Image (cartoon, rainbow, N blue to C red; front, side, top):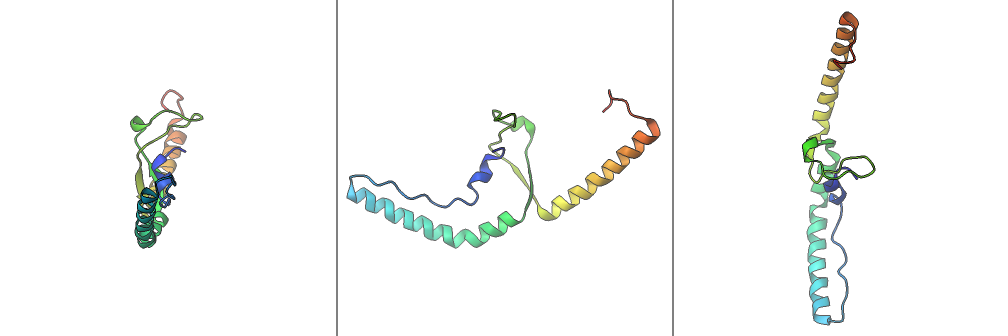
Length: 112
């Protein structure tokens, strides 16, 4: 719900709607079959890409309207699984450094 582009990562082509025009129906069905063949051909690469997503983020300035109190983004930045591990390590170091600083200098709610 927050990152709208993610909703469509695994979605395949949708079935064409049928009308009274048989010629148009045939054309739509052929297009659907072509789209399905391309989708199935690209599926292994897509699944590999999805499995390598570690974290998503976006600048808050790019947020759209809020839904249920959460911002909604029409774009996102992707961090790989490997880089997410590095980020978590760096955050833990930062957290330890901040706790050390607070222990030595005290906490001032105005500064936090």
